[in-house]
Image 1 (cartoon, chains in turn brown, cyan):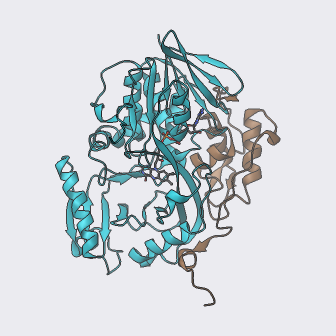
Image 2 (cartoon, helix red, strand yellow):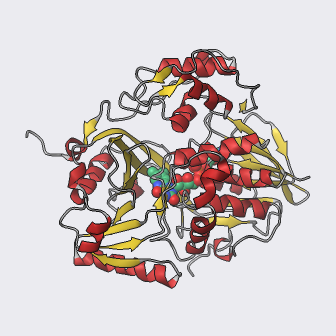
Image 3 (tube, chains in turn orange, blue):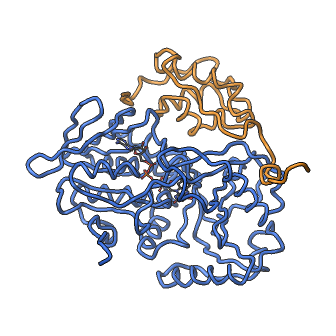
Length: 104
Length: 372
Ligand SMILES: Cc1cc2nc3c(=O)[nH]c(=O)nc-3n(C[C@H](O)[C@H](O)[C@H](O)COP(=O)(O)OP(=O)(O)OC[C@H]3O[C@@H](n4cnc5c(N)ncnc54)[C@H](O)[C@@H]3O)c2cc1C
């Protein structure tokens, strides 16, 4: 059980401008802000900010986002789940997903 | 000062928490999942639709579209991406148009501005339609919003107002004390006490209500949705079809979010939030059939969610007479996102024993009767 307590004030950091999710251009500062807004895990952060929801679906930034959230909460990264992978495994045209014709 | 417990941190539970906290009530929200808003509320298609609604639900959603949705971003302090750009429901055959005319007739009877448009007017509203579209229904005040943001913005704003949220807290039973529902028990045996309890736990509400002798006849049904890569802005109406083979919209981000039904939903295992192999293909065929221009757009992600499908497909919103202290909001039957702000407001009023903003007789818990 996790109580979603308010955290102490958000202290700016020199690298808050660093882009963490390159697909959606989400910065470290935005992720830290979202943790203070109550997003305590990668699932909520993704839904709130779109980090890891772009073309690569978080394959590049997933670990970094988790590390930032864990540090902000003062917990170990191992206490946080990974993001959920979803089909299709890579971006696929609607035309191809729509087709159920074999051998063409 | 009174104290209320809410079971379920979906859009509806979170909205109720927010409106209660605004009145100064002390609120605790208990959520089974480790993640806030992990149920239908973060998995839906984002439709804020009045057209095609059950006549009983129409006044509720119209109230929301008039009084709550337009200012919700300001209210919650973040852009929840609400668009009121209308809803086009498309038809390709005379049979489709017949279905659409029926929807228009119902809507007009309920005082909603909705009408039929011919293919030329439909194309004027949305130039990307397939040439096969022969007509559509048009409701200019329908729209869509970002359900992930609405759910989490209510949560975040309520938390700022001092609401206690506990995730990973599964409520296993409601408890009566001297005839009033004033406590709940969680899986680890913790007892939470309050002056009243709101149950807004989707399909799982059924089991919880059973613990105090109430039953809401509902089934869990899996629905599926998908999202595309980003595209330049094309149109911002909500789109649908007479046969409901797909519906969707373009988001602020530029991606399109589409849902669809393939027809075999009632035969899937509703206890597991798992997508089927036929759904995305079926939805994509539906989309391409009406919007050939989108066929090269890439799908990034597909997912499934469970709805709480009530016997008469409208929700239960009320204080059952047999269980003072208890307020129920469940059975939203796959269209509760558009209703979530008004449902949250009504639940907050019910929990405080206030007069509700709208009459709720049609949503009573005791309306389900045997057929003979
Ligand atoms: C794929 C899909 C598409 C949809 N499209 C639309 C649409 O376009 N427009 C529209 O208006 N609606 C749509 N809906 C319906 C809409 O999502 C729901 O009606 C709405 O989200 C219901 O909100 P809720 O808060 O009641 O439910 P939920 O979001 O399911 O919240 C219930 C919460 O209760 C929690 N809970 C359950 N049991 C317990 C327990 N024992 N203890 C503690 N917590 C518990 C759950 O974990 C969950 O977080 C769609 C639904 C799906 C699945």
